[in-house]
Amino acid sequence: MNSNDLFKKEVHSLKRYVPGKPIEEVKKELGLDEITKLASNENPLGPSKKAVAAIRNEAENIHIYPDSLAAALREDLAKKYDLSPDEILVSNGGEEIIKLIAQTFINPGDEAIMATPTFGLYTTNVLHMGGTPIQIPLKNYKHDFEAFIEKINDRTKLIFVCNPNNPVGNIMTQDEIHHLLKNIPEDVVIVFDEAYYEYAIKNPQYPNSLKILKERPNTIIIRTFSKVAGLAGLRTGYTLTSSKIINEMSKVKNVFNVNRLAQVAARASLQDEEHIHNTVSLNYESLGLMEKYFEENHLEYIKSNANFVFVNINMDSKVAFQELMAKGVIIRPGYLWNMDSWIRISTGTLEQTENFLCKLDEVLKLE
Image (tube, rainbow, N blue to C red; front, side, top):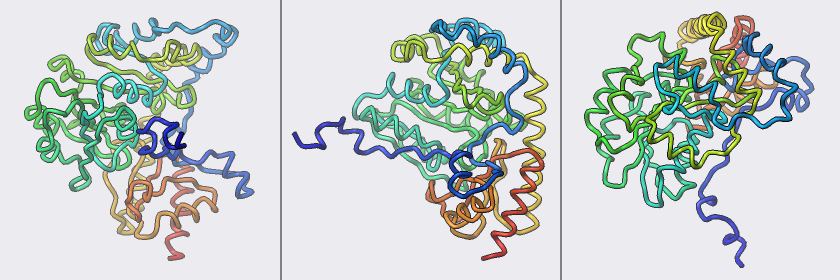
């Protein structure tokens, strides 16, 4: 047997996802004691204290399998969003939902439309199922919905809209989304990836996707506890969609996909509105500090409604990444998205943000 025949043929076309560098690895690699990690869009305030207490209370029960349906958490989410629990699926982070969507809808030869650059796992999972990702370049750094509409044909199954878009951080507005919806067939499933929802709703132009779902059943909304709730290490996400779609997606999910600690932590996080408020407030303070520096130094940046910002520093992002890491700051270099002079920086505490700006200033002055 040819060694290439050993593996599923679609695997050969996939690219491995490149995660942000772990703090421990950078410390060991560079012999540094202190690291400021602003690469993975994590919550600088950490998790809610209520979530930590819930984990401690549940820790002695980890010998028992979790509720495979996450019924209590789904009930809480149903109350929050005025939905039925049957319209909610809880998952092992948003990544699992994206995989489940591809596994549920994509047959070989089916097409899915998405922007580029955007979150890379849309392409990966569509390809893995034998589908064809139709990648539409951004126009003025935003989703080009006119080009999306032009690309729809009989093979189109899915449209992915990352809103706010990762890595650029901006939103597609209510009017722009409405225009897209008016011009696509009802049987095409639109996926709104709203991982940064709690930050984005501060913008009055951000669309109400729940209202869209109630009017259009072939709509899927992805949200997560990783960002604003600070539970990235527990991997807990959820999808809001029609009960018909939930029923089909549930057939392909792992049985015990969300562990006991994650479920209780997520429930506790929903009750801690003060933690969410403080997280969002700090986020916009951090963004404000960075935007001020960028404007003073005439650096092009994209106005963000997420917990990161994308900026053109007019130098090789690989070099900037290495230089900043040597100074104890980890960011995401834009070459990963074929935008070689751009970098993406997560928001942090004000101290972390000021430290980043100080180090960036040193790097830019070396050029």
